Image (cartoon, rainbow, N blue to C red):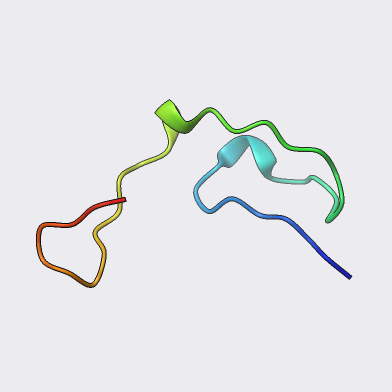
Length: 40
């Protein structure tokens, strides 16, 4: 079974595994990658 999740998307808490999701990317925090100075 496929499930969806968006880390740090607080408005997704409590949604079922197959529920539709809208992501406001402006509300997501930047995270550092394994490479110094590279964020996503």
